[in-house]
Image 1: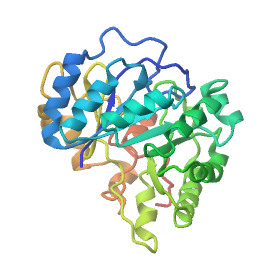
Image 2 (image 1 turned 180 degrees about the horizontal axis):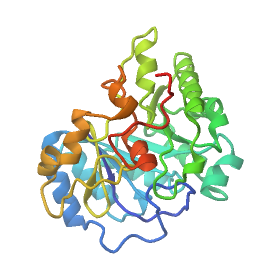
Image 3 (image 1 turned 90 degrees about the vertical axis):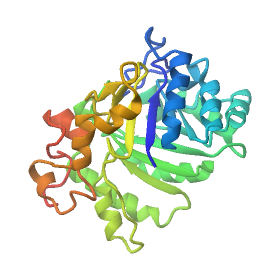
Length: 322
């Protein structure tokens, strides 16, 4: 299934230290209009994608539930990615009635101290209140971005996600784009330790666990007793990102423009973009190109670009031993 992450707005009520979108208090003036957004949904419906409505904070877009309702009415699976602070009973009513199948809430720590350090005072308490408004009414998952600051809270966030009744916990490994900084990255060795920890915890936890922006995890899951596979980096092959202005990118962390839906149909961009085609072919360089896990993993193309300037080059966070 194709996954389309759609940055519906730049507006956000928080100012997170590593924000990919460099979100701000107000929307951009040139964001897709309601008419453009509905036309985009109509076009991609034939692809039967999963549509992730993100931002910024998508709940600050006035027509967000109209867009969600239109997409679900066309048979799409729709998810909402939010910081959780604006959730409440009336908002959850609209989530349920619009047909949104899952809500993802970003937590950057298992404690108020860590989360608020990254997202701002009071944001942890507000996010937990938002999560409680979802409990028993809508499926939700926790998204946790791993940085040098919060890497020691992986086990604790697993326990918190279980205690809150989350359906899933998705770990994101930081890519230094937007407000994200290279000094916030963990080392390659530390990433390997955490991936092994996550895989060990996975068999002991009662929730779905996924890893994003660390495709080396596919190597570990393929070697596990349960034989779980993994497709590694999905950017440009099974995942694509559409910006608030309609620009199409392989993923939200890889700022290589494939085209704009204001100039060309999305399907034309998806089928013919040289950047997207190169990512699918995986003619990679350096250690990623010669690695026996090239197809299963492929390295993080966004991190390779952010740290080396070459989106087909080696992923600097891949251990040299692999």
